[in-house]
Image (cartoon, rainbow, N blue to C red; front, side, top):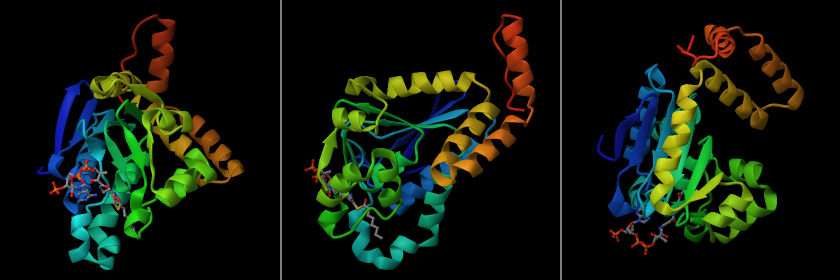
Length: 254
Ligand code: CO8
């Protein structure tokens, strides 16, 4: 990997660090493909139960790589490898946590919108500055942002291109917790460690069910939730047995 670093800091947890510091971790096509590929590895590996995605202290990511744009032109946005990478990140079935310090802009913020939990450092700045280069958030931002923070706040961010700070992001529901900058990744890893102790089959079902609430009409998603509830698993039997026997469960993901 040339544009990301991948580590396994604790049992069941993968940490992906965007690593193009000189370009503020801008999402070059190569970087997007490497993130997607690391997530595909995480999906295939039964030992991985949760992934944390982060950048560095200056930037989570400053968005799509503006310097690739003159050469790529309009066809670059519809290029198959790029779209496939976004799709594969969107479909990642295991819990995905963003630990955000510094700038999270444009495509960088769209990447965060695909995460399941967002922890922001006090220095984090979120924004959609695409309008300033006569573009718009075309990798999901115009659709996902208003669903998360409401129409007026989304319009404010997308139409002005102005950034919001970590406290405002927290207030608007774009981040669940704000930490001192030096503790953001550590806190995200703590949460990942907690998730990793739960049954992977249950956490993946729960993620899929919550995401359904954004995608399907309520009557449809409620009946799918009911179908999932009826889906008996070995982990569920194990969870109940462990509770009754007053011991820690040993989950296998079956
Ligand atoms: N792409 C490429 N390089 C970047 C990017 C970027 N998005 N952002 C920063 N860099 C580079 C800078 O060019 C600079 O490189 P160099 O040292 O070689 O000159 C280096 O990173 C450091 O940046 P700055 O010197 O600018 O650092 P500052 O602290 O002065 O400013 C900012 C930081 C405010 C973050 C500033 O860099 C900035 O405004 N960056 C651009 C942010 C932006 O506009 N992001 C959105 C990009 S568009 C997008 O994400 C999706 C478009 C989808 C369109 C779909 C249409 C269908």
